[in-house]
Length: 159
Length: 150
Ligand code: SF4
Image 1 (tube, chains in turn blue, red):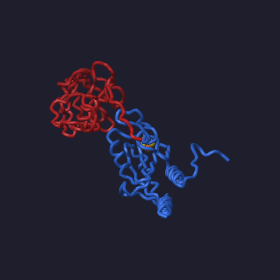
Image 2 (cartoon, chains in turn orange, brown):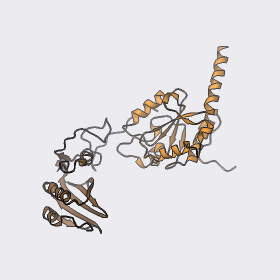
Image 3 (tube, chains in turn orange, blue):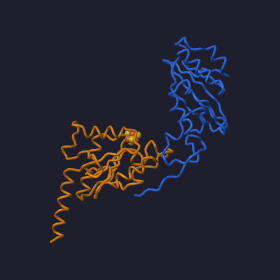
Image 4 (cartoon, chains in turn orange, yellow):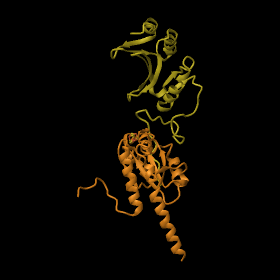
């Protein structure tokens, strides 16, 4: 009986999350290009809020961490602290070439690598910077993953 | 030069060597002891503004510190050679107080001692950066990467 209730609750939570994933944006060393594109994605022109995607003010209210830029030596601990403050289940989206593997800052003396050197990344959005369409595509992929659907890797293949 | 205020005679007397690498550019090589007099001459003549202080490491025994002044399209560079193992330059802050940021950067990135600079401590590098490692020197022993937790 208890299990049934818990299962139902879990389903309700997943349903809510799918319909309204709240995101937290953290820049751990980005040049600001990716951040500007992410902000453009949130503006009324692209209006992701109609899908329930909305910036959360605190890591404790966020489902998805959108991380831009390489991880610098100074911001590494802050990035980890923010991630640890997020409630489970939490998801990470790496945005931009730098977040994927260091990008133009690769092997720079003060950077330590991409986001996935420190956090488990669920979706990678390449581009320098990625366009808002690519970011929205990344969110869609993440939602598919949340639903438990198969997520395509790499380029979609022609049917 | 477009701005006729350039104190050419004074600068020529202070410099070792003069060259024009491109149109609108003038490079002067100076000894560190003549730097303040040259900068004072520029400031008194109201020629240009301090645009940047740059460290230059060619991997040789002598570093160079470049003081770049700009006025409209014109760029005047004062080049100071200084030995790598005992790099020292005087501070400009007594004449141009805002040079402090460039000088702190020079000190942290190249290990050049800036004599007379009041500000202490690191400003640009990470809190856990090892002391006495100057990342923009060609032979810097950079610290290893930190371990991830993923
Ligand atoms: S991927 Fe490009 S736009 Fe994004 S932080 Fe790196 S350099 Fe800047």
